[in-house]
Image 1 (cartoon, each protein chain N blue to C red):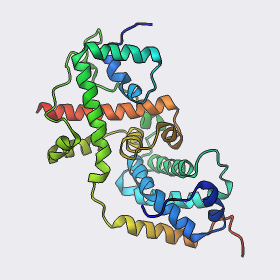
Image 2 (image 1 turned 120 degrees about the vertical axis):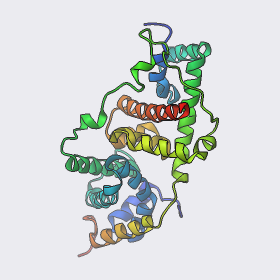
Image 3 (image 1 turned 90 degrees about the vertical axis):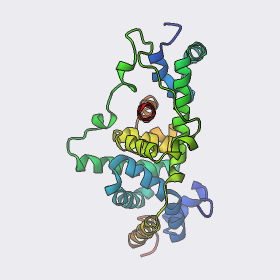
Length: 202
Length: 89
């Protein structure tokens, strides 16, 4: 949050020379984001460890960094891969397919066979984020819905809607195609929205 | 190709619409559908509100001091393992 990070051109030679202040700046700039990403993929319990492991991997790989992406994207891709292999290790049955998971965004029962609404969206008693977040109960519903997402959906949602990265960068970080990245994002958003729908009908 | 997307199509294409990833043809169909369909307009309004709410969550989450400690731990580990590119011996 303090000084702005120097450009990659300035930073990389300093990092390669072992400049400790440059490392401190780099870690300060991206550690928070890395933790959010790791948490999204492997969960709270392993996020700190994964981030630490990822930084060590960054350090080791830096001399071979070919600059085909920005330093930021490259670092976060290492973090994403570290988190994914940790997830596979912790839950042996999880394949990448399971991480991607393929289901329609909304319950198919909400539509008639001709594609029109069978169960239309209920009216919400809220017009702004403030209205929604004012209810502690609803906040818990949203948190719970995020928690229940498949890991890759949660990662896409976290990076796009909570950390404000752009989609091309996110797809590079998560190593998915742009169309798959958008599917992940949309499924995740739809589930959060559906959870709020459900709450509003209570 | 059908001209008008169904309500189900609208809910599937909603993020692509917001991310400007629909073709001009799809975008036109999407907008036409919204003009005529109250429920899909409501659905889109709720999606935008959901996204705006998600944007707010990081600031709503209280920061604890464990992040600072973590940063220190990472920097310590990096100090103990200098990069391979480092000069000197």
